[in-house]
Image (cartoon, rainbow, N blue to C red; front, side):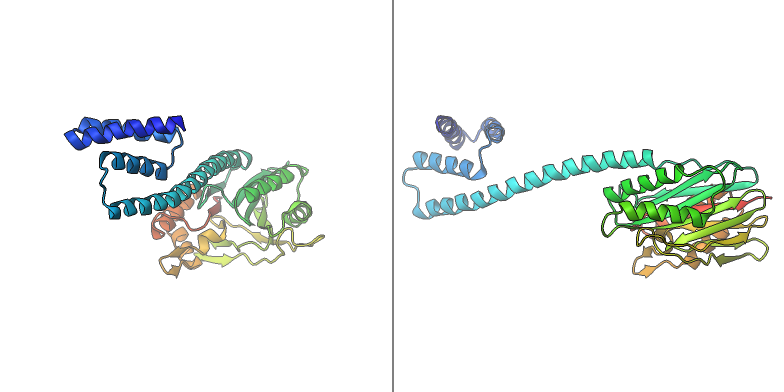
Length: 336
C-alpha cells in the first residue's frame, strides 16, 4: 500500500508539472513510470485510478460528469486488465508450444531421415515437404542383401506431434526386419501388427510398399489403403495407374495383403505419392492427377530428382506458395 501511495505521489508531481510546462521531458518520465508500473504488476485500472486521484487533488472543483467518466473508464480498464492477463498467459503458452513443436520437428527430421539408394542404372528422386512444421507424410528406403530396393511411402491419418513420433516407430520396426528379401505383402502384414498394438484411437496409417528387383527389373508392391501410384511407360508415352487395394494399417489384427508385380522396362518410371500431390487445390478448383502427370511427362528426360523438384515448384506456384497438405513424391526411373 505504501508503494502505491508513493506511486500516486510521484505521478501527481509529474502530471502537475506537465500541466504547467507542457515539457516533453516530463512525458519521458511518465514513460518510465509506466515501465516501472509493469514491473510492479500494477494493472491498467490502478493506473487510471492513480490519474483520477491526482486530477482530483490538482483540480478540486472537477465537474461531476468528468468524475463519472473516470468511474466508467476504471470499470472498463478492470475488464481490460483481466482480458489482457488472459491474453498474456495464452501468448506464453503459445510461445512454449511453438518451442516444443520446433524441437519435435527437428527430432522428426533426425528420426525419420533416410538415404536414397545409389544403384547403377536406377535413378531415384524423392521430396517431402510438410504443409506445417510437423510432417504427416513419410518415406523410407531399405536395401536387402542382394541390393534390391524397398520403398515405403505413407500418410498418417491424425496429424501433429503424436503422428510424427508414431511414424518413427514404424520406421524402426521396418529396420528391425531381416535383411534378406522380404516381399511387400509380408512387410505390410508385419507392420499392421505393430500399428494395431500401438496406435492411438482415431489414428491410422496408409502405406504403399514396393520392392524393386534390380536384377530382373521387376517391381513388387502392396498397399494399405494408400494413394495409388503410377508407372510411366516410355515406349507408349503413357501412364498407367498402379492398381492395388488393401486395408489401412492398424484397423484390425491379422490382415492379409495382396501382392502385385510389374515389369519395368528401360526408360519407365515408377511414381509414388501422397494425396497432398494429387488432391491439392488452386483457388476453388482441385488439381487433378492428370495435370500432375503432364508435368512429370514434361520433365521426363531430366533426372528423377529434378523431376520431383519441378513438380513441387509447379504445385507450389499454383497454391500461391502456401501448401494446404503435406507433399511427398518419389520417382524411380530405369535407365538401362
